[in-house]
Image 1 (cartoon, rainbow, N blue to C red):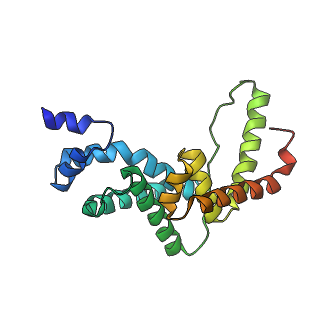
Image 2: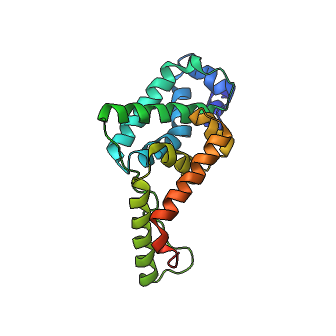
Image 3: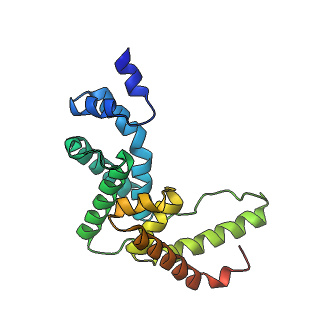
Length: 192
């Protein structure tokens, strides 16, 4: 009964991690279910909406995670460690592909908040497409902090931990990313 309670626990507690280390398949499944969406989301955004590649990266991350669980020392939050593994897997895959991969479906599919009229929806989709195109042109060092901030809703400190850099560097890269996007999207100023 107690093990079942552990498996349904919402946060990744030390007990769940210990069960995973001992090879408990239900604990591993619970760990996967708790964190798969955030890993997939980062990979999907990193690889421009390529679902197949995001799924491959998600599998790679959990394979690494479960085979190297002893490497987690608890110095940072478990989710920070997962983001770090995910970012590393994405960067490694990019190196394998030897080309820059676009950002992809960042704003796609979102419904307008105020008006659901067809004209407003069409205009919102057009703006979203232009934003996507602009984001695709950003270098990963500017794109990734923006993804972690606006898609994953991480704090500057968490982003710094994931990217293994200072908070100042994160702030600088996000500021620079905003500036680059503003330059590319200046013509949309009156539409948003």
